[in-house]
Amino acid sequence: MKADTRKGISNLQPVDITVIVQGKPFPQYTSSMILLQGKINNKKILFDAGSPYERDSIKQNFSEKSISPRDIDYLILSHWHMDHMGSIDLYENATVLISEESYILQCKLYQAVKTAKTKINPFEFLVEALIYELHKKNPSYELLPNRLRAMANIMFNNHHLLETFINIDKEKRIITVSEENYNLQPYIHLIKSNAHSDGDLIGVVQDSEGKLFCLAGDVLISEKELDNKHFLFNVTKDMDGIFPGHGNKINLNKREFRNC
Image 1 (tube, rainbow, N blue to C red):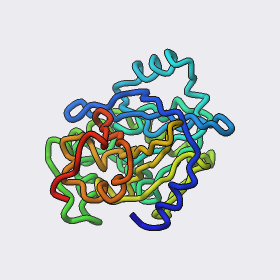
Image 2: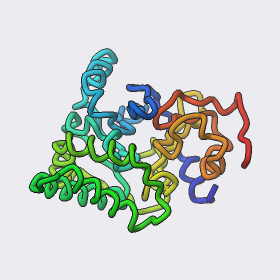
Image 3: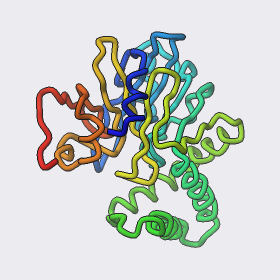
């Protein structure tokens, strides 16, 4: 871990960590949603916004915890994929944090879907647009046909969420993270990675017992991938657990990395 990353972590203040939605892997692709509540100023930070197909569950889970989406102060999007921004329109008062890379791609994809709707074969146009945008910066990007078409489908059917993102930007409620390490308030330390997509953001937080946890987004989709995630090993070797993007919380004190 880089020295500046460790320094950022050492200055963290404790937060209460609540799982709003437990993520599910492919083919459901429901992302985990983690709520952080700070002890200072009672700030509420949400890490990822779930799947657009889980909106009723998201609303119900907030209600059961006596929290309104309007109470969220900050929404952090780990990356640009639609299954992580499915309830973005619920957080009317939140400032949205996203990496500069994801922000640029999100704006391009909004225009791509808008243009696709004018075409004779809009879905195929969008698939080709995704292939172009994902492939041009990273020729080794693994373009699995079934997942690529699923990605195009969820974007096409939920274009209003991309439009919401653009409107939030017009309201100047978006912070783009360009640094490799970024601290939001004293509550969460963000580290930029390109391990899943360009500009992934992962978070590091400390709970009220002083334990450190990593919010991994899709840099780690589920525990079965952990042994081969060398980047995460370097980040989390002194931590107590990881919240992956689509799986159960992993207790690191009960297991060891292999192949690292």
